[in-house]
Image (cartoon, rainbow, N blue to C red; front, side):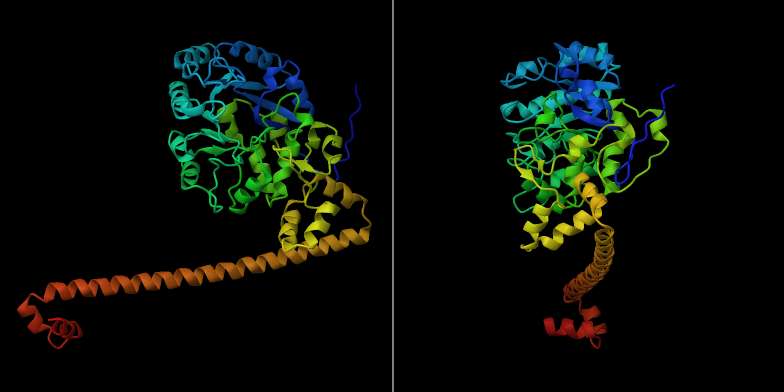
Length: 437
């Protein structure tokens, strides 16, 4: 009998296996095994193939060491260098329906890639056809957004409850945030009716730090994390799913909120991928690195990196790194950057440096945590009181306006009625009527 392996999980998160809802793991036979090493125990291949070659991706999913499922590309030839649906005839509704009917066990949704270099001016019609296919089977549609030719609100009008918008941090044109830093009304409306928003880190043009910062300032958090993983991801800004999860914690996303996005069982409506039963019984959380320690994987691939790249190649130092901290101390954003750090506690490098620090430094950090937590709480109370006062003042102004409008209407009605005017001659309204005639 093999003796149990003891893993030092101090300062780390101990979690069940991860589910990655946007990968291209089925493009290579070795893909599923590689993501399993990263702690991914369930994955979805998001549109690598369409109806013509869907059997290839299903074969990889069928032989994978962990559960894998597939989104069928509405473009029947799958991902193409010259654009999946630049030729609209490739968005073949009949072919997609036939493929789903024959492989319903593994096909769990439809993928529509809508960028201008993928669908061009056909983006709206491509999405409409994808919905036509998906609705016939009660399946969701995942859309690849960002840099579309059609305005985003027009495309979002076609999305239904349970559909997924991936690459939610894609920069302009047609980002989910406008130039003034506000989330588009159509985006908020889509979330209210049950559309999901997914990270979809990606390698080129899908995630840029300035766009991430603008969206995070609004509090519009992702519903799910995903990587857009492929076999070369470890050599790009993607790296792996734990790395992609770590990035947003530097922007104030708490461990609890991030864990909900990672662990949403509602993802099962898309994936058909369930956690192993032993992993559903509970999890122990500790502050620290984002690596899934429960899988027994090494944390070296995450902790060895002191900078986090976005999909455009720009790197950003973790909020707790010495170079980032020293840079921010000299600027006006220093205090704003430490609050997300204290909320998150999730960068692996922070975890390692804290473990190696002397006890005195750890006590100082603990004191800083409590101080900022108290100040933040007091600020929140003060802000809430001011908002309540402003709301009451607005209500009072609205009531006065309504009373004045009612008095005006009464005056207008009585001004042409001699009997009523005589009866009310000695009242304040009567005097107002008299003065108005």
